[in-house]
Image (cartoon, rainbow, N blue to C red; front, side, top):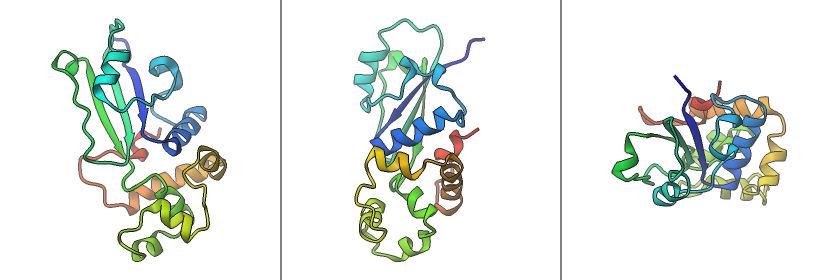
Length: 173
């Protein structure tokens, strides 16, 4: 039985930088060689994904990993594709910048801070990281893969993740 092709769709540049780092270090449950078009995709809309990628003839099922910070964002495939594609949402709620907050040992401080403050704003204001959303910043900040993996595992431990929800830790080998 042939392995499924993988489509990995990342919501933002920080997510893309993190997934690329983990792919490069071969720390994920899938490899770059299994990826559709051998790269992380930017396509967030199901129709756009179908039109761009599913017109090709694939003999295998496709597993779509969607890395996103919203639990409410739908990815509704047309009926013709539903039995050929498995969609797995990897939720980074509230934002991927929580990994930085956790790594800086500021999780409890952030939790006590203003309840409406986004993690990226907390990083900018309290941690003095104005470029926290840039690919370059995230790549440099998580230069050490072990630091990144530790933050991902700690995120799973510290966050209140709903029972059937997947997070980045679930993609680690």
